Length: 271
Ligand SMILES: *[C@@H]1O[C@H](CO)[C@@H](O)[C@H](O)[C@H]1NC(C)=O
Ligand SMILES: *[C@@H]1O[C@H](CO)[C@@H](O)[C@H](O)[C@H]1NC(C)=O
Ligand SMILES: *[C@@H]1O[C@H](CO)[C@@H](O)[C@H](O)[C@H]1NC(C)=O
Image (cartoon, rainbow, N blue to C red; front, side):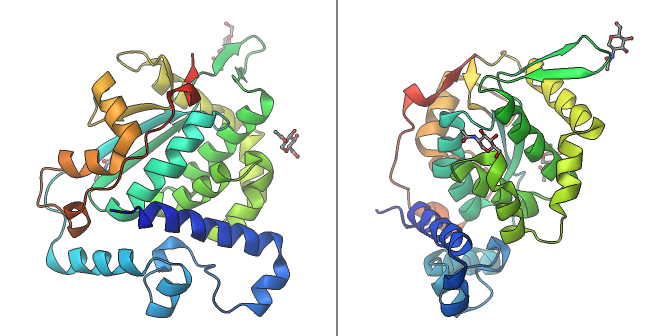
């Protein structure tokens, strides 16, 4: 079995990023996918342009045959915006799995990771493993989630940021491409002000209360539980793990096991 979903997602994202960096292309090509994922299956032409024909067929198959009947599989990701392993996990596992299995899984993203906070001046200040740029990336992502609330609205923006070279710099481009209704100024203000600090402090508390405490990121919690086994399975083939864990009748997509692309252990960011 090939991995059309992951490859196509990446192709699509490449197409979108290319589109944004080469504006002429946008004008000349009717075939380019420049719609948010929620609209990829809105017509066959769009599905083709976005290279997700197969996913759309599967999507309609399981929407038509069953409604999610059992509790969604809870997937929590503790991460930091510039850690290579976190970016890799989001790009190759979490986002593609969510595209396919979004209606049987519930994702919680907690950007903070191995950061530290201290209160010297009466305000929380944060120190991030990969420097101030990582703190800014974490903050922007926390603010995006705060304003957009619905994972359907923010996950693609965050994926787009994590997929690109410079997370904080590409932010406006990703927001404009996938959620132009939210003003980037509002998000920037949040990320540099008291609201951002408050959100990041909440993420700090959430991360610091993990049991067992995290030793590295990406740190994955499935249905409230973290074990080495869950972590390994999630890193290697989250798609299969979510299908296996879901207790309801499985969506059509689960009938094909996806090929495993293990995440390289050396990409993990140790605490
Ligand atoms: C999804 O997770 C959030 C916590 O992150 C929780 O508040 C919400 O109830 C969950 N939703 C479902 C449908 O499980
Ligand atoms: C920071 O510490 C000071 C002095 O201990 C305290 O009064 C203040 O409430 C703290 N601020 C925050 C944001 O926790
Ligand atoms: C990303 O962009 C920001 C803002 O332009 C810049 O300060 C930072 O150095 C860049 N980071 C990298 C890794 O290039």
